[in-house]
Length: 162
Image (cartoon, rainbow, N blue to C red; front, side):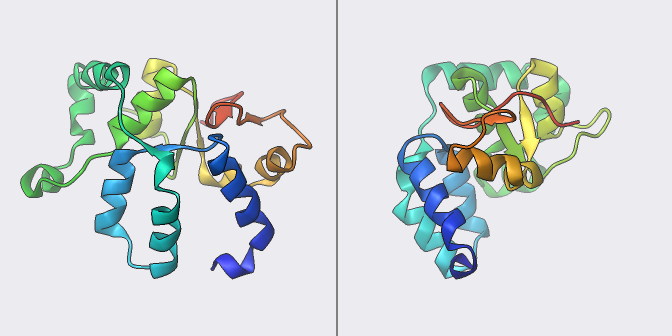
């Protein structure tokens, strides 16, 4: 997979090394249960520094998220029963505290407890993978454009996806 997109991966690796792209420890923990591809796990292990431990401010914001009863369903029944990691609220909290942008494959659905719904409720920017991997992202990585996404501290969106 990596071999097919060497220039993207080189730029992405550089952005990670520069702290322009980051994630949270809970995503790392979730991926440990979900991934089967050896190459991607090897990449994650070699970039483990991008998966940050939550700060006190982020933990406090997770509490704010769960203060909204509807958003408590971010933690699924199987996650509760099996004691599996739950990354979504920590990803959202990290973006809020760091002024970043959440990148998700989820869609905004009315009255749902999905990442986009939580982000919009709290005024946090979010976008989808298609936009991140689109021409605007590649322009940012090349340094040619900062119109849509500014990756100065994490990924920042100048507009929210809807």
